[in-house]
Image 1 (cartoon, helix red, strand yellow):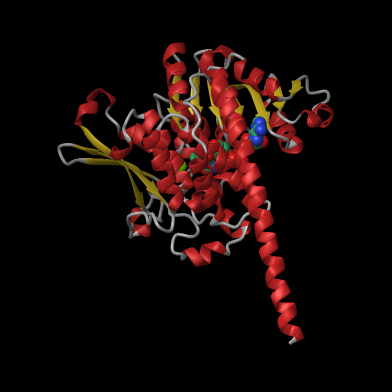
Image 2 (cartoon, rainbow, N blue to C red; image 1 turned 90 degrees about the vertical axis):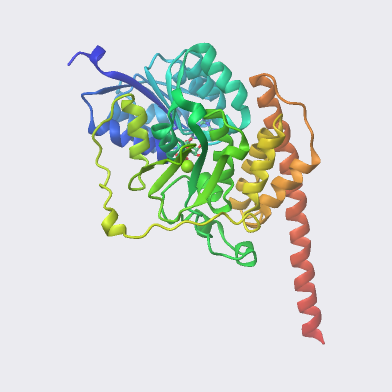
Length: 409
Ligand code: NAD
Ligand code: MG
């Protein structure tokens, strides 16, 4: 088969969880796709392994200190190698028909935008870039004539059943949520949860950041904001429904009383394949859904008291302006703080709330504004995180002082 018959694809964030599911689909269909570029953050061994399997023209690693090791690992392969943030953007700029945007966090903003600006079809997993810069991204997509295909399983589900030409017939959309690993935990129990417990998601095997976001339900909050931009809906027309089995991936409620949903075995290869083959569909190795085996699907309303992050995200979306970017930046720092042991689990939403209450920046008008704002809020959140960590330490010292004192009595 001629190379020109194959769809050319690039993966930004190839070494991650979504990246890996995408690679799986490409390897299963070598006759349909050719690989232009791959990127990774700092996992040299994984990026080299993927590069040898997929034979891209260009490979970029974000961490410049990894350049030598990657070059050595791929020596003799003939693959062009570069390192640094600009190299990741260059990978996005290489002329692939289809680009998977699967970098985690605001770090994915510029690379994703680079692919958008050249009018590519962009499969979007990196929700944080829509949260931080939704209006700007959507304007750039329209201006460049790019195609944005949602990969987040909920948004992909809605995309499959949302009648774009009959928007006026749609009442609301409903994002389902697994509820995460602490769905039934009390706030007091949550306060003592460790990073290992938070990352152990009951239904999906994902990167650490989104796993923690799922545990706080900030993930669903980010997804409400993501949906507002993708489907041009206000906050009060985006509902959230807890559905622990993760079989119904989301729903669209029409004004005539019909509710359309997309169902499937929870496996990211389904939404990724939908974006990869769109507007066609392709065969995957996803386990077929057997509803008689599952037998029971359950639903409940989210508990906004135990999951305050969801309320914070809704508030940020309603406020608009800079607030969604503030929420996202503060959350990224809070999650890092939790994963590194500086912050307790319930401290994540507390820190985000504290930062949102403390700042009131102007709405960003350009991508440079968003990047500047993101940096500023990260700094603000990091300072407040250190202050909290120091206060916690003095608490622990005070506790032990009491114990020692008690022992002496
Ligand atoms: P992950 O942590 O497994 O992978 C992230 C990727 O980004 C890796 O390739 C990593 O090397 C790269 N990366 C990290 N920091 C970088 C930086 N500063 N510069 C360049 N590259 C960097 O994460 P994931 O679970 O694959 O999630 C990726 C994105 O997709 C996130 O935005 C997440 O919210 C979204 N998403 C993930 C899932 C899932 O099932 N994992 C589902 C829906 C949406
Ligand atoms: Mg999702």
